[in-house]
Length: 141
Image (cartoon, rainbow, N blue to C red; front, top):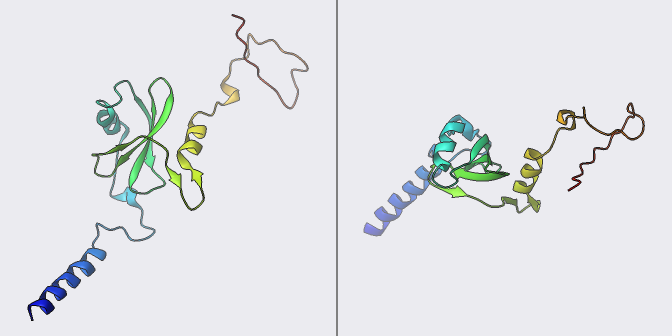
């Protein structure tokens, strides 16, 4: 009899945990409940990466942590979990598609907009109204 009562209680605990709001429903938007502002991310990172400037905070592809774009001399990505206790610094890889998601995001945040490059003192070779332009940087020293 004692075994049946224990088994019933264990089953009730398993089924109640599965339907608990702490376990997100497939497709649910986690950013409704979990919020991390730039200022809070900066204060969390202060002891770990002292001179880091937080550029952007967004939900990571893993959906259990935030992706934080930082600039500490060079741009990088770190991840902070929803409990705000753990920091992950490294590559987030999609195992199914075999894609390095961190590398793709780093390429995106380090992309340079050619329209923002000052060309007032540039040496122009060829037609200045050409459809395609190539910008070359050279250091004579």
